[in-house]
Length: 149
Image 1 (spheres, rainbow, N blue to C red):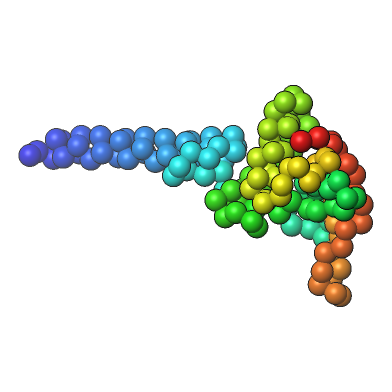
Image 2 (image 1 turned 45 degrees about the horizontal axis):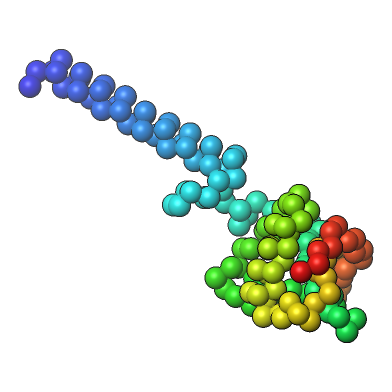
């Protein structure tokens, strides 16, 4: 093989290498910016939440017919649906029928009998971190939506 042929081959390989590299980087950027979860690609949600001393979180609370409240710990009860609490924010925007279906599914996963529940509410909870006690404290609770199962 002549020097010219080797040089042309090296240039072609370099172009292919650059094209592959830029394509992979572009796909990773689209997945991260679009918050897509396309296995094996991920939006890296593990590190995407802001960590400050003030936070808000969403909590589903079952209001039983006897007047007691019970938080639905969906992700702690069933490891198969560990990320289903990310869908809590979708609840207010759904139709009443879909809201009811979602709430019944969460009650089932949490092991709560729907017959004992008067309603399920979605609360937004503001929390502050106490550095001295090294604990979180709820400072405000606002009901976003209430659903009758």
